[in-house]
Image 1: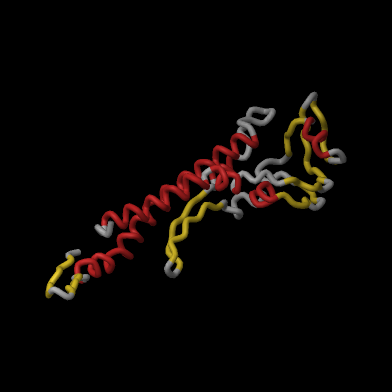
Image 2: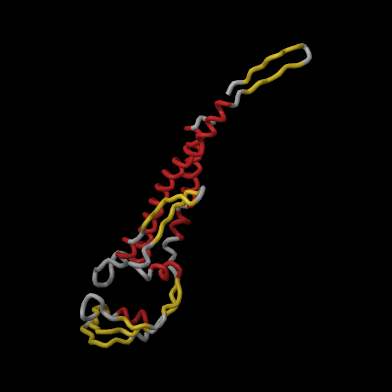
Length: 196
Protein backbone atom coordinates (compact mmCIF):
# COMPACT_ATOMS: atom_id res chain seq x y z
CA UNK A 1 0.00 0.00 0.00
CA UNK A 2 1.56 3.25 -1.11
CA UNK A 3 0.97 6.64 0.44
CA UNK A 4 1.54 9.58 -1.87
CA UNK A 5 1.96 13.09 -0.63
CA UNK A 6 1.03 15.81 -3.12
CA UNK A 7 -0.04 19.44 -3.42
CA UNK A 8 2.39 20.64 -0.83
CA UNK A 9 1.71 24.27 -0.46
CA UNK A 10 2.73 26.42 2.37
CA UNK A 11 -0.66 26.11 4.00
CA UNK A 12 -1.18 22.31 3.82
CA UNK A 13 -0.80 19.10 1.86
CA UNK A 14 -2.86 16.16 0.64
CA UNK A 15 -2.30 12.45 1.23
CA UNK A 16 -3.44 9.82 -1.25
CA UNK A 17 -3.66 6.11 -0.48
CA UNK A 18 -4.22 3.63 -3.30
CA UNK A 19 -6.30 0.85 -1.72
CA UNK A 20 -6.82 -1.21 -4.86
CA UNK A 21 -3.94 -3.62 -4.08
CA UNK A 22 -5.08 -4.02 -0.47
CA UNK A 23 -8.71 -4.49 -1.54
CA UNK A 24 -7.61 -7.21 -3.93
CA UNK A 25 -5.76 -8.97 -1.11
CA UNK A 26 -8.85 -8.73 1.12
CA UNK A 27 -10.93 -10.32 -1.64
CA UNK A 28 -8.62 -13.35 -1.52
CA UNK A 29 -8.64 -13.56 2.28
CA UNK A 30 -11.92 -15.55 2.70
CA UNK A 31 -10.74 -18.36 0.39
CA UNK A 32 -7.29 -18.45 1.97
CA UNK A 33 -8.78 -18.37 5.47
CA UNK A 34 -11.23 -21.20 4.65
CA UNK A 35 -8.41 -23.41 3.36
CA UNK A 36 -6.20 -22.72 6.39
CA UNK A 37 -9.00 -23.29 8.91
CA UNK A 38 -10.19 -26.47 7.18
CA UNK A 39 -6.64 -27.89 7.14
CA UNK A 40 -6.13 -27.05 10.83
CA UNK A 41 -9.62 -28.33 11.72
CA UNK A 42 -8.74 -31.72 10.22
CA UNK A 43 -5.61 -31.85 12.40
CA UNK A 44 -7.58 -30.75 15.48
CA UNK A 45 -10.34 -33.36 15.14
CA UNK A 46 -7.69 -36.02 14.45
CA UNK A 47 -5.87 -35.08 17.67
CA UNK A 48 -9.16 -34.99 19.61
CA UNK A 49 -10.17 -38.43 18.27
CA UNK A 50 -6.77 -39.83 19.27
CA UNK A 51 -7.22 -38.37 22.77
CA UNK A 52 -10.72 -39.91 23.03
CA UNK A 53 -9.23 -43.31 22.11
CA UNK A 54 -6.48 -42.88 24.73
CA UNK A 55 -9.11 -41.89 27.31
CA UNK A 56 -11.12 -45.04 26.56
CA UNK A 57 -8.05 -47.23 27.12
CA UNK A 58 -7.10 -45.29 30.27
CA UNK A 59 -10.59 -45.30 31.77
CA UNK A 60 -11.56 -48.87 30.90
CA UNK A 61 -8.16 -50.58 31.07
CA UNK A 62 -6.49 -52.77 28.51
CA UNK A 63 -7.98 -56.16 29.33
CA UNK A 64 -10.94 -57.88 30.98
CA UNK A 65 -10.45 -60.71 33.44
CA UNK A 66 -10.29 -63.16 30.53
CA UNK A 67 -7.64 -61.01 28.73
CA UNK A 68 -10.11 -59.82 26.08
CA UNK A 69 -9.62 -56.09 25.35
CA UNK A 70 -12.51 -54.07 26.79
CA UNK A 71 -14.56 -51.70 24.69
CA UNK A 72 -12.61 -52.38 21.50
CA UNK A 73 -15.74 -51.59 19.48
CA UNK A 74 -16.15 -48.35 21.43
CA UNK A 75 -12.57 -47.29 20.70
CA UNK A 76 -12.76 -48.39 17.07
CA UNK A 77 -15.95 -46.45 16.28
CA UNK A 78 -14.47 -43.05 17.17
CA UNK A 79 -14.81 -41.10 13.91
CA UNK A 80 -14.23 -37.60 12.62
CA UNK A 81 -15.66 -35.31 9.97
CA UNK A 82 -14.95 -31.79 8.77
CA UNK A 83 -17.66 -30.06 6.76
CA UNK A 84 -19.06 -26.69 5.86
CA UNK A 85 -22.31 -25.44 7.39
CA UNK A 86 -23.13 -22.10 5.82
CA UNK A 87 -20.18 -19.85 6.60
CA UNK A 88 -18.83 -22.15 9.33
CA UNK A 89 -16.26 -24.92 9.06
CA UNK A 90 -17.34 -27.59 11.52
CA UNK A 91 -15.10 -30.27 12.99
CA UNK A 92 -16.86 -33.24 14.53
CA UNK A 93 -15.66 -36.14 16.69
CA UNK A 94 -18.38 -38.73 17.22
CA UNK A 95 -19.20 -42.34 18.02
CA UNK A 96 -21.17 -44.76 15.86
CA UNK A 97 -24.04 -45.35 18.27
CA UNK A 98 -25.58 -47.88 15.87
CA UNK A 99 -22.52 -50.11 16.24
CA UNK A 100 -22.01 -49.28 19.93
CA UNK A 101 -25.39 -48.37 21.45
CA UNK A 102 -23.90 -48.09 24.95
CA UNK A 103 -21.46 -45.29 23.92
CA UNK A 104 -23.81 -42.49 25.02
CA UNK A 105 -24.52 -43.91 28.48
CA UNK A 106 -20.79 -44.54 29.07
CA UNK A 107 -20.08 -40.90 28.18
CA UNK A 108 -22.99 -39.18 29.95
CA UNK A 109 -24.20 -41.70 32.51
CA UNK A 110 -27.85 -42.54 33.01
CA UNK A 111 -30.28 -45.22 34.05
CA UNK A 112 -30.00 -48.77 32.75
CA UNK A 113 -33.48 -50.25 32.85
CA UNK A 114 -33.91 -53.86 33.95
CA UNK A 115 -33.54 -56.10 30.91
CA UNK A 116 -32.82 -59.63 29.79
CA UNK A 117 -29.44 -60.38 28.18
CA UNK A 118 -29.36 -63.17 25.63
CA UNK A 119 -26.40 -64.52 23.62
CA UNK A 120 -26.14 -63.03 20.12
CA UNK A 121 -23.36 -64.96 18.43
CA UNK A 122 -23.20 -68.14 20.53
CA UNK A 123 -25.58 -70.46 22.33
CA UNK A 124 -24.54 -69.25 25.78
CA UNK A 125 -22.87 -66.36 27.62
CA UNK A 126 -19.56 -67.04 29.37
CA UNK A 127 -18.30 -64.47 31.87
CA UNK A 128 -16.39 -64.16 35.17
CA UNK A 129 -18.39 -64.71 38.35
CA UNK A 130 -16.89 -61.43 39.62
CA UNK A 131 -19.34 -59.68 37.27
CA UNK A 132 -22.18 -60.75 39.57
CA UNK A 133 -20.61 -58.86 42.47
CA UNK A 134 -20.61 -55.66 40.37
CA UNK A 135 -24.37 -55.84 39.79
CA UNK A 136 -25.65 -57.32 43.03
CA UNK A 137 -28.93 -59.04 42.18
CA UNK A 138 -27.90 -60.25 38.71
CA UNK A 139 -29.78 -63.48 38.06
CA UNK A 140 -28.80 -66.00 35.42
CA UNK A 141 -30.07 -69.21 33.89
CA UNK A 142 -27.06 -71.50 33.66
CA UNK A 143 -24.24 -72.94 35.74
CA UNK A 144 -21.07 -71.77 37.42
CA UNK A 145 -17.72 -73.43 36.78
CA UNK A 146 -15.12 -72.26 39.30
CA UNK A 147 -14.75 -68.52 38.76
CA UNK A 148 -16.70 -68.50 35.48
CA UNK A 149 -20.41 -68.66 34.61
CA UNK A 150 -22.03 -70.28 31.60
CA UNK A 151 -25.49 -68.76 31.15
CA UNK A 152 -28.25 -69.07 28.57
CA UNK A 153 -29.80 -65.80 29.75
CA UNK A 154 -29.11 -63.12 32.33
CA UNK A 155 -31.72 -60.94 34.00
CA UNK A 156 -30.04 -57.58 34.54
CA UNK A 157 -31.67 -55.73 37.48
CA UNK A 158 -30.94 -52.27 36.08
CA UNK A 159 -28.58 -49.68 37.52
CA UNK A 160 -27.77 -45.99 37.82
CA UNK A 161 -24.59 -45.43 35.82
CA UNK A 162 -22.15 -42.57 36.31
CA UNK A 163 -20.73 -41.05 33.10
CA UNK A 164 -17.05 -41.49 32.29
CA UNK A 165 -16.86 -38.35 30.09
CA UNK A 166 -14.09 -39.80 27.93
CA UNK A 167 -15.12 -37.53 25.02
CA UNK A 168 -15.68 -34.19 26.76
CA UNK A 169 -12.48 -34.65 28.78
CA UNK A 170 -10.55 -34.95 25.50
CA UNK A 171 -11.92 -31.57 24.45
CA UNK A 172 -11.07 -30.09 27.85
CA UNK A 173 -7.54 -31.58 27.73
CA UNK A 174 -6.86 -30.11 24.29
CA UNK A 175 -8.83 -26.83 24.57
CA UNK A 176 -5.80 -24.54 24.76
CA UNK A 177 -3.97 -26.32 21.94
CA UNK A 178 -7.15 -26.15 19.83
CA UNK A 179 -7.50 -22.41 20.42
CA UNK A 180 -3.80 -21.87 19.61
CA UNK A 181 -4.07 -23.90 16.40
CA UNK A 182 -7.10 -21.94 15.19
CA UNK A 183 -5.42 -18.61 15.99
CA UNK A 184 -2.34 -19.77 14.07
CA UNK A 185 -4.55 -20.66 11.08
CA UNK A 186 -5.96 -17.11 11.01
CA UNK A 187 -2.45 -15.64 11.30
CA UNK A 188 -1.21 -17.91 8.49
CA UNK A 189 -4.12 -16.86 6.26
CA UNK A 190 -3.39 -13.18 6.88
CA UNK A 191 0.30 -13.79 6.14
CA UNK A 192 -0.50 -15.71 2.94
CA UNK A 193 -2.80 -12.90 1.81
CA UNK A 194 0.05 -10.47 2.63
CA UNK A 195 -2.14 -8.27 4.79
CA UNK A 196 0.29 -7.93 7.67
